[in-house]
Structures are given as C-alpha cells and as structure tokens.
Length: 432
Image (cartoon, rainbow, N blue to C red):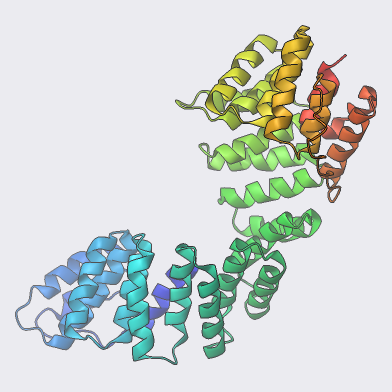
C-alpha cells in the first residue's frame, strides 16, 4: 500500500459521518459500504443522490463517499468533480480539501494538489496529514528540499506515524543522501516492523551503498511475503549478482521477467547474470527477446552484440553494434565492442579508430580504457587518467581484477569466470 493510498484511506475514516437518512436510506448505506465493490458503490451513490429530499449534510456525505469510490476505480477526474461539489457545500472542511489533493496527486497533478494542501493546513494547522501529503506533491515536482521540510513538520505533529518516515526516506534517497534515508527507513521499521515497503526500500538503498549481503537479508524476508511483485525479485537478483552468485541471480531475475516480461532493465540484468554464470545460450535467448521489440535501444543492441560475440555469432554482432552506434554514436561501450570485433577480424586500423572514439566518449571509464588500449588505441597525453574501479562487492572486485590483469597483458588471468559478464572479459576472450 502506498503512502498516498494510505493517506486517502485514513482520510476516509476521518471524514466519515453518520449514514445518510431519508427515502434513499438503503442506497445511502450501500454507497458508504466499504465491503461493496467500488462500481456498485458508485451506482448506489448516484441513485441516492438523485433523491430530491436530501439535506445538505446528506449530499455532502454521499458526494464524499462516491468520490472515494471513484478514486479507487482510477476515475480521478470524476472523483475531483465530486470533491469540488462537496467543497461548495463545506468550503472550510479540511478533510475535503486534503482528499481532493490526494485525488489530484493520483491524477498526475501535484502542482494543483498543493493549493488544496495549503488550504487544509490553514484550516487545521496542527494536523500532520496535510504536511505529509504536501511533501509527497513537492517530491513529485522535484522540490526535495521543500518536501523534506514538510516531512519534518509532519513528524513534529505526529512522531509515531511510520509512513511519514517512509516518505522522508524516499525524499532523502532521491536526493542521493543514502545514509540518512536508511535512518528514516529504520525509524519507520522501529514503529512498524510489519511493513514491507520500507524494508524493500531500505534494501534498495543498501544496494546503492554496495552492501548486498544486508540487502539480501531484507529481500529474502520481503519476497517471501510478496511473491507476485517483480521489483522485489529484481532487487534480490541484483543483490545476488553483486555477491557474484550469478546462477542464483539469474533464477531471481528470470522470475522477475516472467512477472514483468516487458521490463527492459530486468532483461538486461538477466542477460548479464547468465553471462556471469557461463550460460551463453541463455543470455543470447534473453537478448533475442529484446531484439524482437519494434524499437531497439542502443543499450540493448550493444549488450546483444557482446553476447553474440561470446556465443560465436560474430557476423550478427557486427550488425548489432553498428546499429547501436547509429542510434547513439557517443556510446563508449558500443565503440569498444566494435573495436574488439574489428581487432578480432584483423582490421587493426578500424579497431584503433573505434577504440580511440570509445576513450573519447568515456574518458574516465577504467574498463573501457583498458579494453581500448588492448584494441590498439593510442592514448592522448591530455586524456585524463581513468578513475580506479571500486572493489566493494565480489562482482566489482572480479571486474577490477580483470581490468588489472588486462592492463598487465595477462589475458589468461583476465579470463576469469566471475567476470564473464564484463566488457573486460570479452576483450580477454577475443584478443589474441
């Protein structure tokens, strides 16, 4: 359950009043019955609202109930229209303004929602929810500093609400402040250890910090309770990949792809895991599915070309990598793959030209620099030295070792199975 949806449900409780009475009493009860499916509630509300003997309070209750049902259905425009009518009847009801703001957020209109939250704050300045929801809207608008101030105001008003800390963690993570984001998620879990959302988000931040073992511990717990969510399988696969458990990673990423077959990011991650596990045919099959799409991205084409080269499909690889370069000429990895292919084919001049372009487009990439040197690039004295590769996870250490061996000219040592997913490994295999 998202923070926004939770807020809406809470507001439905806050804004509830006694069932509407009168000639349409049975329809009014159906309209407000949370156990009834939303379409049936919407119909019941319409029938109840058609009565000519409703009081102002009854109209207000029915409009609010129907707006909530419409929001559940995703019919945000009609929900907002019902809130508009309700606010005409009760312009100083803070709950109505906040609910309308939530509906506008759901409708993709965060800027419009802010004026409703401002109004709710003026009407009930001690209430935490308007600050919380305004923070969500500000975050959607990219105003993270302002969002963090509102999350802090909400915390000051209700420090025991775990969802506020989840939102605060999201804003901090989006701002690149991973350490403070972890602190916020930890606080949320201290208050509500049963929540899976902050646990999964905490794991995602841990992966950014290159702490895959801790992330995996969190994800094992969350995946077991949410087996139908592809994002969780993807994150767990990424954690296992960072730990150089490539075959295990491929299993999780394959399951994620089964659940979300159009997800390009998952497909690429799966192909890399299969390469790491030495499953060249599996990686080729995975990327063949990507190439069946009506439009290909340079990233997909480059990765497919790399797989094709490793799987002894050199002619196919050339076509793929040249298409990638046509789409995105400044893609350093694509130029490096082309350089390796041309070197493999014996075209030393072409390989050198492509390799030098690769370094030009990615001057600080240590892996590309080592590959380009091997492919025959003549390094310009003014080219900045590539940044050293980190060795913070088993997978990154394998890559760093491969690059070091490649730079030392020890191709045999560079052909390590643990780096089988890397451009460095491709160079060690192709260049003789």
